[in-house]
Length: 480
Image (cartoon, rainbow, N blue to C red; front, side, top):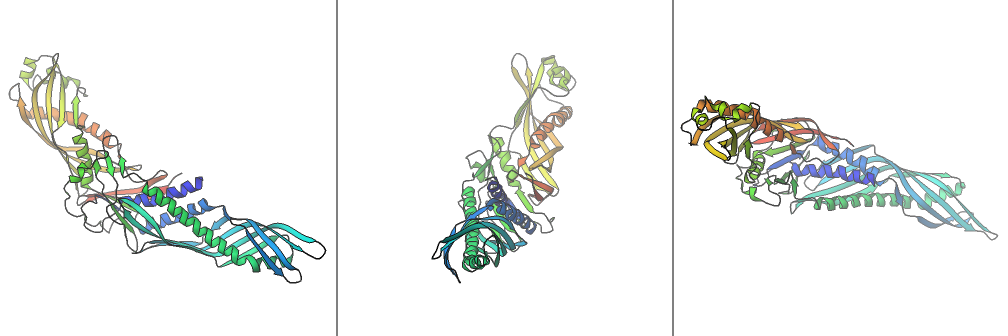
């Protein structure tokens, strides 16, 4: 049972990754794209074969009974029972992709079987019977399956186009029994044993694909980031298979859970092909900048971009005495009173993926409040903030570090007269660098989850940003 779960995990890895892959034609909804390269296909193929073998071993075959005519003896009733495949070895394998589907072929295989034999026949004086064990080696075995991958209402649909198993030859070793019995079993049962092996292995492969397809259909259409935002992971078109890769597209926008409000984001043209000079990695996961804009929109609409700052490293700046020389009238009107800064992002942050990084533009208002038995707003300052983000892969998540590039501040309104904005801007710069940016980076360091099932991790990852798209090139490692 454990081996079957592992097999399902490996196959799910292959298909879940396929939910995050490259666009091949202009579409209006594909905001996350990815590709499984030939290197990734080989990796997946080897894992699938290894775990498929583990999942079907031991494999019990049906009992075989037959009456055979043996020279000088006559009619003999022979039964083969407990026929069990207990090991399988594959010499070579390959995977091919084409317009009709993806084919996985394992060849040069051998399989070892054990079984129990018994026979009986009657002479004119008495009944003769015997039993014992036998061992069978299957040689020249080839197993192949061809799958079609299609979009079915946003989910990946797997169907078996062709599946078969071919056995070239078998050899049988009897533990006990007469020489005539060996030849009789070989002549009478060789074909039936071969057919049983071929039919039952093919059946097991088909059953595995059917169960996997059922699991794929039951996967959620959204992946929740938290109780505020969820990622829409529905497919937008059928996968496209080339001779060296499989390409997919998904919607890829963040929304409030069970909501599609961010689908109204304007798509800035079709997605351009990924650069073909990219590193030779197993997978490529590409995120359009609208993915990041969609998550910022969700948090903005949920009013999660407002902060009241009442503690900072230099706490003196949250008392009117600390502003005595910056805003003299503030101190004169409210001497030695505590303060807070009410920071409100006034519009959705604008995130742009550029060459070698991510640019972030934020418009916000900072209201200066005085605490004098009640909260008294005394001035409001508008800020235009320009920051940059350096993306990083943290385990299996996309994290990042934001750095303040520059900002401008202007007085929006004031109850304490005109402000010396150059001095005020210097204070706000300190607040941004010591409070706001560390807070944002703490959140970003938690990371956005990438599409990897449990048991897998990214390895030797590289990120590239260009032309409105952030792309992750990575190998994948299986860790139990």
